[in-house]
Structure formats: structure tokens, C-alpha cells
Length: 502
Image 1: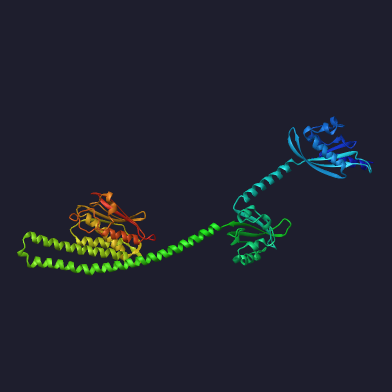
Image 2: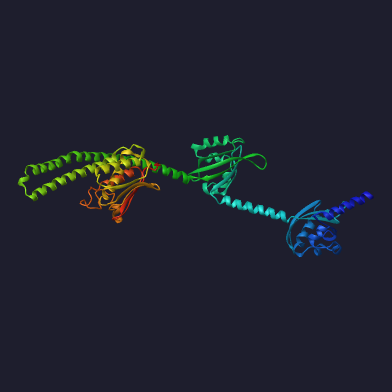
């Protein structure tokens, strides 16, 4: 008897401390349920007291919003031998709660149930968690299925699809059941790449568990679709191996690449044609230059020679006006000869082969400055040449650049009592600057055009070819040149050479 009392005591302690709500009912006539006892958890869940509610019916204990579903569960429990379970959402004053009920009817053999035990567990948190998982799963499903990426899963051994996203149906036209049929994948791969794809899939194992490749598939209408597929080996829920991957339609990319290749081929063809045209033009230019240097020089020499002979042998027979005319003829023929020389120099600049090396521009500038001073020793010019300026350039061509720029500075400072000529570097540009005659910046664009001069010949000698030659040399070195100036305050020319210049 003592052992029985101890056991009963332990049961009571368990009922009072468990979080599950225990309710004990007497069954009357198989359809009425009268409360016999509840534990503390049930009192809290139902908001009742055992002392005040003992003997009350189900309808008196449960709120109106839940009575009907509890009644149905109780009736089902007394009609079904053994345990029965139910999940219900109770609308309680403090808020909706999800409960899980485990119901057991107690009956004597051969008789109807006379008692019912209902154990209620609050599973609201669990339901909220499950709903959150379902919501997140639905969100990810919508995200995946609304993109152009096609998710798929296949049997590792048979390569039979077990799942494909709805995008596959939209893109390829085959219904879902065809995708899941035996041999669908291999059947609809382009015949030229079928063996390659099969070979790649055969390489997949737990050792090499990922592969990325591109191949062509055929749509239901017979079109060809380029697919970029990322395949990996995964472990299914039952522990077996499966293939999972993502297909991406890259047909547009492939077509764009093909178009780029076509355009490149067309560009190469045009370059070849253009090169041939340029070579032909260069040959014509060489022929023209040869004609200029030989065929035109002969009559110019004759004009100059006969004019000179007239001045020497028939000077006393000519009046002053005749002598002046002959001098003008000689000056014009000599100027024409100089222009021919300048044109030939300009053409050689364009056609000559470049041999680049590291050139010390400061040393070149000093050499040119010395030569200019020796040509007019009476002049006093202040030279400011920055030391150790170097560039990667063709030495002969860059010498022509500095000779023209420094020569112009020397020429256009001739009227300055305190002339100053500078050569240096600012930022990434070399510069030649002077305090000479300068120019109107409005006409700066004409400076580099052949035979365009901003000063009269009587004021400063020259033919207007030097700066055009300089610009062509600079462009051949992939550089640029620009000019700044103010009338009466000097000019500055800024230029760059090869991008690899230090």
C-alpha cells in the first residue's frame, strides 16, 4: 500500500510540474463530457480553476470559439479505440494559440468508454517557426522560378531528371512530364555534343563533384539553345547520390560572340584593303616626290640660272625696273626650291621607318641652342633648359621636333632686347616657351596646317611647314601637341611623345 501511495505521489508531482495541460473527463452516455480533474498547466491554458469547475461540461469549460472543434475531437476519441491526436487553433481572449491534443478513452472490456484523458500541448511557437520556414521556402521558390536560371535535379546513375524548374518548360517548350521521362536529357542534347556531355557526366563522382560547361540543346520547335550548365554531385535526403545543377540560356552571348568574330573578320579584311590602299598611295606619293625632286627642279634651276646670267651679262642694258624684275624672278624660283625641299621633308617624316630608343632631350636642346647662338653670335638670349629630360622616341625625328620648336622660339624673339627661351617638363608634357612675338590664340588651330602663317614673310621668314612637320612626328609617336600664346608676350608649345616615355 505504501509503494502505491509513493507512486501516486510521483504521478501527482509530475502532473503539477509538466508544461503539458492534462484534463480528465467523465464520459456520460457516450456524448457528454464532465470535468473530473485538471493540472496547473491546464488551469493556465483554459483560464479555469479545478475547484470551481469540477463536474462542469465541456461547453461550460471551453470558450465558444473552440467548443465545436473540441467536441468533434472528443467524439472521435470515444468512437476510436486507442489514442487519437488533433491539432487545433484556439481563439482565446489573450490571442490565438495552436494546441496539439492527445486523447485517450478509457473503457472496460465490452463496454462503452466511461472516461477520457485529453493532454494539450501549446505548439504555437513551433507552428510559427514552421510557417516561417514555409514562407521562406515559398519566397526562395518564387525567386528561383522567376529568374532565367533553370534549377534541376537528376538521378546520379540514370541521369533522369527528378525535378526541373518551370523556366525549362517556358524556354524549351517541352511539358514537365517529358522532362521527367527516361532518357530525356541525352535525347535532346545537340547530336554534335551528346557524347561530350555524357563523358563529362561520367567523370562526376565524389572526387570530382563539380563541373561547369556549355553545350547546345534542342527546343520542341527545333531551335538550338546554348546552355551554360553548372553540375555538382549532392547527397539526397535518403543518403543516395544525385546530380543538381543550374542551366542558363547563353544563346544571346554566343550569338554576340559570333557577331564580334564576324565583325573582327570584316575589320581585318577592311584593314588589309586599307593597308593595300595606303601602300598604293605611298607608292604614288614616292613617285610624286621623285617627280618633284627631279622634274620640277630642272626648270627652276634653268629659271634661276638664266636670270642670274641676265643680271651678270646684261646688267648694263637693263634699267632699274628690269633689274628688279629679274631679282624677283630669282627670289621666287629660289623660294619655290625651298618649298619643294620642305615638302620633301614633310613626306619623308610620314614615310620614314621609326627606330625608337631612350633619347636625352636635354642634351639635344643644348646642342641645338649652341648651333643657334653660333649662327647669330651678336644676339643675347637666356636659355633655361631643364636637365636630364628623356623620352622613348626616334632620335632623328625628335631632333627635327626640337630644331623646329627651338628654332621658332629663336626666330620670334629676335626683336626682344632680353630674349628668354625655355625647355622643360610640366606634369606629363614637355614644353618650349619663349617671350617673343606670340600669336593671337583665336588662330591657334591654323598653326599646324601646312603653309598657314600668322606672321607676314616680311616680318619673320619661313614657309609654314615646320609646325606641320612637328605635329606629324608627334602623332607618329602617339603623342599630342598644343599651343598657347598672347600677342607680344610670347608663345608656348606643349607636347607628349610615346606613352612609355619616363
